[in-house]
Image (cartoon, rainbow, N blue to C red; front, top):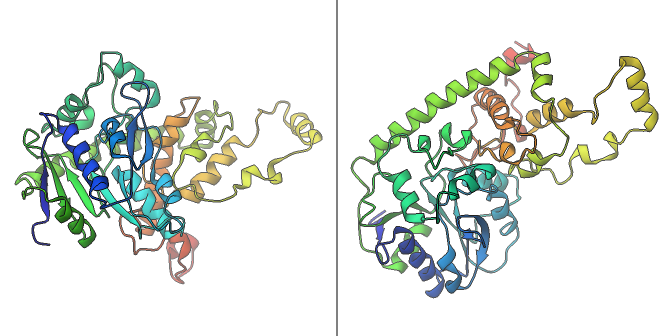
Length: 384
């Protein structure tokens, strides 16, 4: 596409201020009817996704905050699965975009009325680390952007007031946007001059033309920097996979791994691609008569309560491992601090390799469980 990159200039020397002005322009020029993006709440630095129609509210927009309370791919599906007659610009992290794409494939979302805006990922802290990071003083959006996107080839290894980025971010091999209409380019950009907006589709090109941004070009070192960042993530990911395998490679170790599980189902509830309208673990299948508990106790001498914790996790892994986007929200939501993300991602890696499937990367590729191939996985099922 011609003239596909524009420059979003700082506002009063503020990088984040400039992007807020850009978002305001989308509403004021009636290019879109609404914006879905992270917004600051009452406490400085803490954000939640919000749907905004008033440009005046965008002074609290926090597009690059390390506070990542939930994967908004599911929220994007909820505002798009049925037509509203309105156009909405949606800003998501790469893992959120990939989750949304998976839900679109399952007819639980649609991009027809959306302008999908992606960004180089700023990384995220766990909920418990956010307060520690903010304890160092007032939240400074611009300082954080410069710290992460200032040319560091390992941006997610940065120390943030003693806190660190989540394991999901440190091991992410897809931290650059895919399947978007517009990309916000920060890695490699001259942040003193502003943020680059790259049109990826004709829809995105139309938006940038309507915003009349100054013309720009992608940085010459963009590809090299991406390669360095992804190489570091791949190395960290391999180390994590080897470590979690050593902790869970027998049934006894797996049971120990989930010893602290309380069957709260938070990991399921926070997973953007755990997509069933009704979960079997919420049905009468797992409502037992009192005598059953007593019989189990009599047979074994002792039975852990609640029951079925290991069965629950094995079922969930079998069900969604092909679609796991590695966002880490399962671990973020676990009240028992079980590193479920590490195990889920290790199983997902095996499943996705087996099916040659990368969730959210190709909107036209059907999910493995939706496709039947007569000669698929012959070495696994023993058919020649």
